[in-house]
Image (cartoon, rainbow, N blue to C red; front, side, top):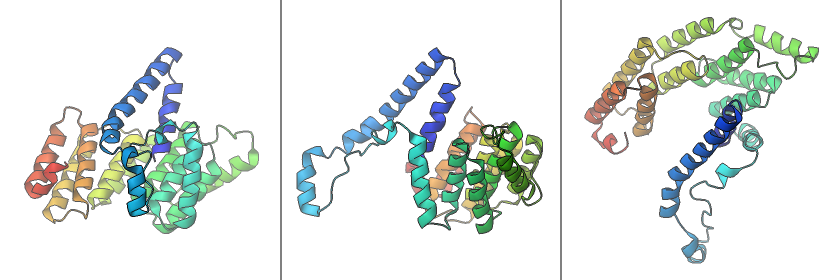
Amino acid sequence: TIYLKLHEEAAAHAALPPAEARAASKAARAARKAQVEPIAGRMKVEANAGRQRKSTGKHPDTDPAGLAMASVENPLAKAANIVAKLTKFHPNDLDAHAIAVRIHLARNKPVLALRSLALLLALDPASPQALAARWRIEAAAINGSLLAECADDTTVVAFVNDRLAALPGGAHASLDTLQAAGNTALANATALDDVIAIIDSLLTVVAMEPSADLKAALTRAVSAALAVQPVHTDAHVVLAAAVALAGRLDPAGALAADIKAQAHAALPLCAAFV
């Protein structure tokens, strides 16, 4: 997803006035560099490259911090190439198809986005990945961006509209109805992973404002998960995601602090990661 994030970052900067866009891009590059340079220092392998290759038969990682990855000229094209391989060789992977939807939307390919959504719905229509992908497409249809690049192609427009109408329950007509659908999905979700994914989608895709209901739903999910340990095979990863989401729901930090305290009390080993 790093290439997709780089593309979205560039698109956001492009929407700013020129001077602000340059400043934002410069700040983003500086932030990435500051984040990865310590990693690069710890993982430096050039001095031992020959010895490592000889002793293990493996080539060292020449880009341990991902600096070369972050400097790709066309990250969206790179992302599209990778996701095409992922969906080909892992046709039952929900995450691969969900990322494919995002990439096709970013490339203004509504037919391909709907095709990836159809594959997701066929695999598991109630999964957070399928729900988020559907909401992304419907939100794009509502704001007009879904068909913006092909509005003059009557065949594509008719195909897309037919596919939207054929979605289970029909396409949602407004962000308000999308939000209501999201709230229903959230009320039915039990696993902490699913709750995190649905709330993230409501905030990011449906543009729902952080609310007391979302905070309460996250708190309940964390408490329920910690009550039946282990939370997950990678409990610290899931709980760290919950803490990060709590920071978006409550920038003041009280919700994140509460979740951390719960996690540390129930799973002391998580204190090193969460």
